Amino acid sequence: MERHRIIIDTDPGQDDAVAILLALASPEEIEVLGITAVAGNVPLALTALNARKVCELAGRPDVKVFAGCDRPLGRELVTAEHVHGKTGLDGPVLPDPEMPLQDGHAVDFIIDTLRREPAGSVTLCPLGPLTNIAMAFEKAPDIMERVREIVLMGGAYFQVGNITPAAEFNIFVDPQAAKIVFASGVEITVMPLDVTHKALVTKARNDAFRAIGNRVGVAVAEMTDFFERFDKEKYGSEGAPLHDPCVTAYLIRPDLFAGRHINVEIETMSELTMGMTVADWWRVSGRAPNATFMGDVDADGFFTLLTERLARL
Image (cartoon, rainbow, N blue to C red; front, side, top):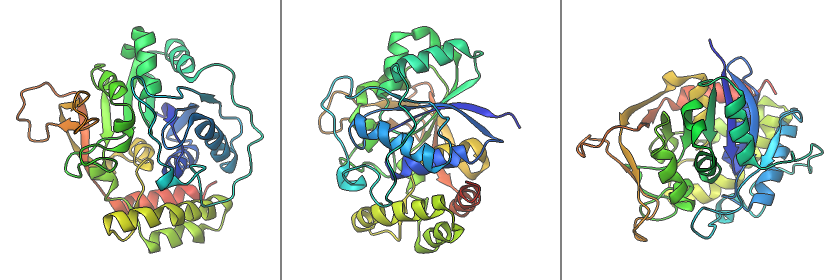
């Protein structure tokens, strides 16, 4: 199997952390070229710090982490401490990282990597707002045709919104950036709330993380213990959805997911529906498809994969 060579663009976030851990635990399928931090769940200083904490938790201080955009393209930053806690990684107590933040801007790292590596060899994996990716595409349009694929977590259709009645958080934070990315012509695979809300951390699944017994398993269990309180109360569900690990799980086991190649447009004009992913699921608009929009996941297979891989770290 050909390895996916990826850049993870992220705003950690407990579920971002699990997505990063899954990628770093899967070297047969995934090579992480670097991690780029963006403002989102918490401000940039914390997301850049958290990304390095997670790398060290995985025993991978060699991974290059770059800080990127500290605000959306055209709006004030909206954060989610009410979900993720004041640090963004509340739950486990993780030491401050010893590994350095890399010099240079995340956007430049994305551009330089795509220009340096063979065309069609690098996949972008955004787990947060799409600001860094959009900025890279705007600054260096030539890189768009060099991207192998974008696999992102964001958006919703049947599940509508989780930050407003119409919008999912990552897209809502920077809808202008999302519009640029979805109009780029790059092949896009979307993990929306429609999928991630089926990947619930039940008590049994969280007990399985803790039973791994290593530092990573315990930390992941403590992360999900923390943020599940908010989601269980909000949705009345039996556990919290693990949004972002769906991205890295898809790279390893695409057969766990099912969706449709459809047109997805981003609402940027209406404050009422700002950031809505208008997904033409029933193909009624006549607009050309621009994304594979996932609609289902084998949740048991997903958690079996996640537990097995986290045990490696």
